Image 1 (cartoon, rainbow, N blue to C red):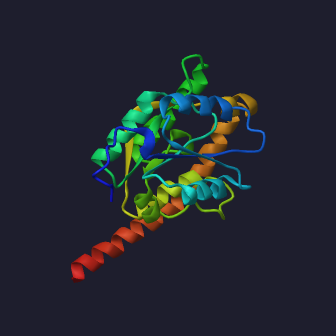
Image 2: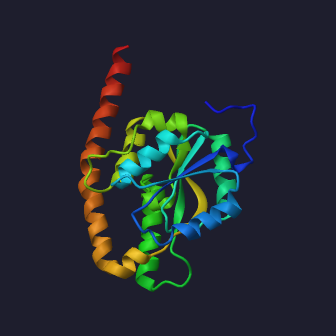
Amino acid sequence: MMHKARAMSASDQLSIVIPVREGEPLIDTLLADLEQAAPDAEILVRSCGTRAASLNAGAKDASREILWFLHADCRVERRQVAGLLSAVRHVPDALFFFDLDFGPQIPMPLRWNQWFANRRARLLRLPFGDQGLACTRETFKRIGEYPEDAAYGEDHLFVWQAHLAGIAVRPLDLPLPTSPRSYAAHGWLRLTVLYQWRWLRQALPRVLALAAGRRRNGMVRHLT
């Protein structure tokens, strides 16, 4: 539950968790953004071997009411902070995400990739980690930790855990600028195909589990 006695307009409600690799080049830019956009937030930069372990370590160490998980290569302004705080005030028991935004100066293939990723996230409520997942600490406990035994896709699996726990996954109707450096380094087509293959490979068993869980819940309600 949220502490109603405290105002939700200030960034002192935020614990911002940033997993990083050793020598991460863009972390200083993000930290400078946060100093301006969320000056009172708790910033937790963690490097614990894997992204999932780093995310979980940050969440465990957090002392504020709202957890916001950010990639080191994203950019943050005051409007993203204000939008997130407002959304959590109105719906404190949801998992929130932003729209992916690679910026205006990107080639058409990446523009289509961005469009598809945002449509998928909104229609299926299946965002990825570079869309700035955020929730209250209480909601995080209900969802469960990021799966540290997964070889990849820990953000995607975390979102599926939210669905299975009955947590609403909601868009914030705000862009979160993110660097397309991975696509530039590895090729947009190759990386897009790889991500979609991994997404489908992880999605199918989760869809089946979700459907089975709903059937069981329906049977229990019918019997009672």
